[in-house]
Image (cartoon, rainbow, N blue to C red):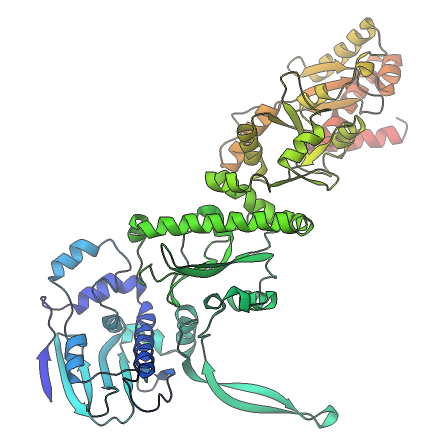
Length: 622
């Protein structure tokens, strides 16, 4: 038996490993299984070149759990090691000093791999690590290396007939959770799901129906529990895959999610290597939190699902997989921020997504339109977030009117400019953000021959301002805006059926009833419009909604609105002015105002109760 000291210039490296890698403790299994995968891949390469003689035989990796013995074993049948290789690879940790390590990586939560520490991550969960290994070279004897977490190790020759390596972890009390089958299964699913070598963890029962009808029986078969897919879809060529293949892989990634809308297969080898598949999920016209839905791999080894340094923020709404060997396995945020390849990857993905949207629009506009309600949020978010993406998809972005018809931005301008251009040559885009609640206003505008857009998502406030800035000749006003009210008048409707004196009486009635501070305007609208309409200044309303989105205090901004009295409506022109009682006139004026507030969803609490009481009184003839 040989004994020695691990070559490292520090009194004891293991407390440092445990202290500074503790937050990523579970990563030990990824490191050890990845090493086993590398060893197996190397053997396959040597065998293909004729340097490893004989049959390749079994190559799967096994994970063995012995709760009673408190051991977890990672077994491969890969290239193995002889004594000299064990001395070289296990006994030399490339550290100049512990202090340098601490100074350089004290703020980095994920430092395994910076100095080839993958194997030594085992000591985060084990009191003792035993390595039993036999080289693929048949004449080299098998050896066993063991270490208890101190710099001392033991090395001895053992009997082992099978090629490959067993790494046996004697789990510490602190790591007791890693003796639970469910915990190991979870980690394997997370970190090893797509490694290129089959990985077995125990067995599982499969059920098969044998026979037919009443004679049918269920047959139970115990089979190997292979936890990974060694040949994931993103490693295949797109021309070999069907739509069903892409959907099936999506279900593999997200078992309970509805089918994706469409997808992008990424495949580039210059100026960096990158493969993957990104899916457009159904967003259901919301911006629900979609974080951690894109998984980053390095040569099929799981790295992270926090990809905000690689994927532009607006693309975080996508789902899928990105695999790049140019990104190190033990990636840190500081590395990603500094690496030039990451910026190239970001630009590439943005371009591919924009191109995919444009291709869909050009090839099948009907299908693209059918999916717009699901992808529109994503596209608008991207246009707001990324200038290059905005330029790329501006011609494909769609607007929808309240009748469900879709237009590109240029098509919309052409459709409405003749009828909805103001004196400043600005095209007035009238919109509603709730079709049902704004029904009366929409009807009034469409009766005049105007078109109304439906912009009903929280992002649309920003998107309108974005288009106003980028297009230059567009102005958006909500259908209940005072601007719209002035727009939707023709020369024929500008004359009131009331005389100047009668109009003065009406204005006095409303001013006295509603108070001097309330802005009251008389306008000769159509007799079919409402008798009293409440409009809100577009600028103040937008400002308030923006501040609400940012969680700011709204109490500083007044709930500004104007009261428009339609002097051509019979209830104003005939009924109100013919009332004898001043009290009745005041009550009627107040009631018409409350009707207008009800139409704007501004009637609540005590005012709503009073309104219902008055309505019941009218019905009873009081």
